Structures are given as structure tokens and as C-alpha cells.
Length: 174
Image (cartoon, rainbow, N blue to C red; front, side):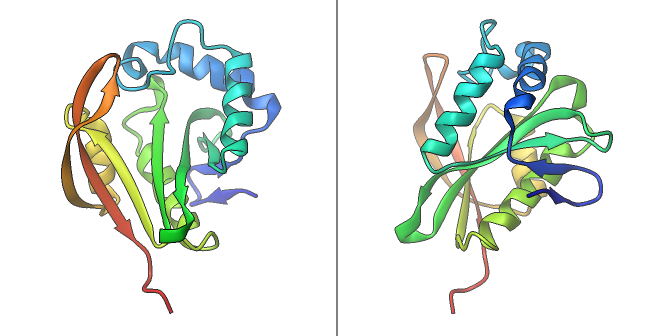
């Protein structure tokens, strides 16, 4: 399965993507480390494989983000599905060398659309540290509604951050 808007493409990560994911993480450590606890100097192809296996085992929907040339520029995914309430969380990151091209917004739009149809979720939530302006801007460009500020919701490298909860709603249930 490949999702595309003609500029970026999303697909589930394959085992052969692990070295490219690890390289993107390593090249982006200065920016990723601020927000992503998993982004460490030790991140390797084996770490990427563990992420893939763990995501699938937990019922998540991971994707690699590919630029127009087919290079891995980051990942996004649907996680923490609440099937009883039709809700899922959307997360995303793009490597430092690929920011400013709209890839995170485009990829997130594709992932959210996939959450609504065919997966059948009604609500897509995006949690953003109140200090993470780039991630906030992605949520806003998606048209997500700011629903709440959650006190001390995210543990970012041992520091509690308040988080904004942005929400996209799918079509009304039939």
C-alpha cells in the first residue's frame, strides 16, 4: 500500500528501510532530540527494526515519508488507537535536511485521510508540546482544531511539558 499526493508518498516501512531511517535520524539528532525521546546517538538500523516490529505488534500504523525522489525523509504514524471511541493519535517527524518543504504537513494529511477512510476512525488527535512551534504549525496547516491545553502531559527528556491537543474530525457516523 502506498499513499501519495503526487509530492510525498507514505508506505509501511520495510526491513530494507531500516538503514535509511537510522541515517535520517542520525543526521537530524540536533533537532529531533529536543522532542523525540527515542532520538539518541545510539539509534541504529536495529533500533529502526525494533520500532517497526513494536509498532505493528501494538496495533499502530507506521509509515515512512518519501520525497519526490523516493528518499526516506522521515516518518509518521497513527498510534494509540482507541477502537471503542474511533480515536487515534497522529505523530510525525521529518529530517532536518528536509524541513521547510511541507513534507510533514503533506504526509500528515495523507495519514489522517487514511485514518478516516479506510480505517474508519472518527477522530485524529495530535499532541504537541507548547514549546514545539514547528509541530504546532503542521497541526494548524492541517486545519486541526486546538481543543485543549493539557497540563504536564508530555515528558520531554525528563521535563514535563504542557501540550496542546489538536483534533481533526472525520465525517459524521452513519
